[in-house]
Length: 565
Image 1: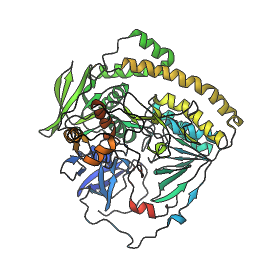
Image 2 (image 1 turned 30 degrees about the vertical axis):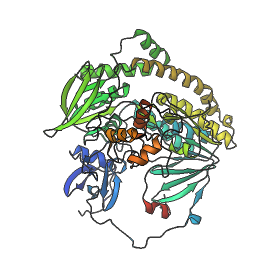
Image 3 (image 1 turned 135 degrees about the vertical axis):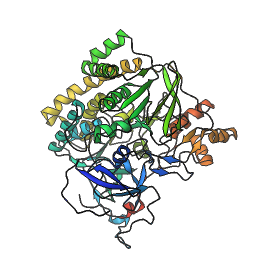
Image 4 (image 1 turned 90 degrees about the vertical axis):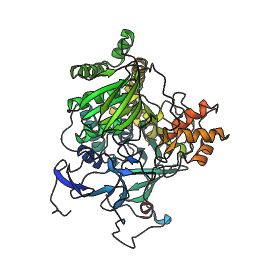
């Protein structure tokens, strides 16, 4: 496809091609959003011949890999649309594009090193708050984030146009405060390795550099908990967060008829947003009972009245728009029938429904690979079997100079993340030799932050009492896929355990579970549960060891200098 270069604004209509077919898209939106809006849900075929599409929507799972302009294995959810793009399903683009048969390269001795006072990894609420606090304390702060636009999963910012509600507007103002304060923001930057004592390998601008700060704040967030039922790998099945990102960031619907299934208030929020956007919500399946506790409602209102009213508003909106909320039930199976998805629901609201898209939102798992690579100690989370970073009230981990904050340390919500971010950012700046109380504005924030964090933790405790599941998790059948990447089933893992193999590492070597692109992020938690059911005791060292790079990167990116930014 040929086109004349023109000056384009974000959101301008452009034309791209998918598998040779023209597709109308918007400049700056994600490739995943553009293709889903055009009805292209199948983005690649696995080595075993199964079709895949967008799943996590945040660059973790790698199921949305496509080939773009000859470049292999590009994540559709993390790639912005540009006019004239030629996109093909992964592996179909033919010979990889090569612009230079002898590209320049660097040796390890020539890799550029940056030495900020504080490095903050992750630009969600926690990372933004930490970066702003450290900068107000006088530190030179670098804020690195893998996404093109800061804001994270909670403050998802629009790819074009104005903010759409108070939540996005709050995020926009916070990002602007961070910029005005002088924080050096590095978007589209992957921190892929961490080495003692406090050295980070970074891929930026297509090349590698090293960042060696005096202190670092890890705010890597969390990713959605897997729900392994038959059909959970089908195209059109994605996380609730992926569908919300398409809508809040790009104003695109993941499908016309949508089923949301899971546990927690986020699902009601997304249902209300998609319904207002024109989607037909065939149901919201909730594993908790309908909220009826006046005492818990009062606890919500006392600790965070605005959030309590917001949550009530989502319920009212869903009822007003005719969205059926199916309590004390859960998703049991998904199948492709006559070109549609057929979802089977078990529990009090047992039924079968047809839809275009199924969104799974069964909670979150913390991301802690980088701190663990440095030797940060963890405590085992009894609810998920996953390691939770051990830290003090200021966010300090067991590694000197390394702080952690936000959902990577356990799920507390955006308000807790914002408050804890202020404390961690100030503590990191203090570690780097700066006085947080030099700024009157920061001193006031610090006085409030501890109280705010405690208040919002009480809110979260009441909220999850209301949303406590009343139905037991499904025990997957042997044919159900456990490892999405390697397509290893529960039956294969059970066979390995029956041979006497024990421990995550041994099972991994025997079956290849956890060896795929996502590096065990999804199947690791599932395997931990399975091992416990088979009598294996778990601790912080029981799961998969963190591997470098923490996310896949192109080999060429290791040998190139970063492009100028």
